[in-house]
Image (cartoon, rainbow, N blue to C red; front, side, top):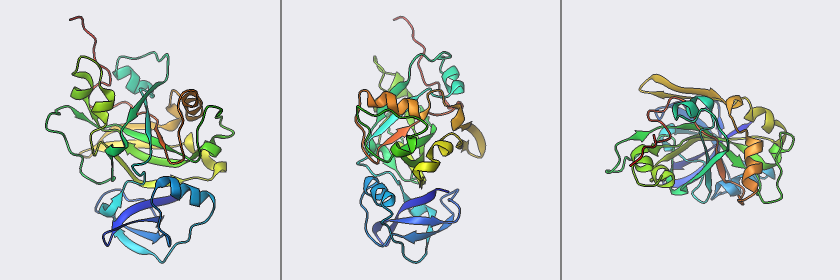
Length: 270
């Protein structure tokens, strides 16, 4: 079984802890946390200490879920996959995928799982995108070849993310502006937990995750990680061909169908 880690603000101090019991489902929930005895600054440092089995915890503390911060810190790089579920690719008029669509999202967009998402004044078409984020355990460099057999060496755990997108910014300019449209501050709520995995359980877990999104009580998105078109091992090997990543960096693996607006514009002659 994995371990659920949280990052939170308590007594004007940012801390980390281990969640006791179920993960919260709303900002109104209470949760029991065993705080870390030692200070940890970054997700990268936390994973290093977890892998070394070098963490000690204090007595249980009761918190409100609204106190939770993103368990991914802003020093982490966010790399994203697009149109990686068939239903979402179809609604974007991309029924046949010929290559793995990769783009970036600014880490300054990270925010807590229950923190407000701020719509910029020049944005009208704001959209949600629930995604599974893979958190790296170690560096990914040019010599990496990731398989289902060794993926636990590279992936430390998962985090739930919302790849919030400003569709009018992305598609309203003369050239596509994906990075701009996805990188406004508060456009990447993450958490509520970092689900840390042992190397041995990583491959099976990554193929059996379910994500869902509700809007005002109505179900809008639902999928299983088994439905991903480009799987984690294949994608990480692909990224290693041209990109170095470090421990604590995150790969957002794509969103299912059910977004408000299509993910690709209709191209017209002007």
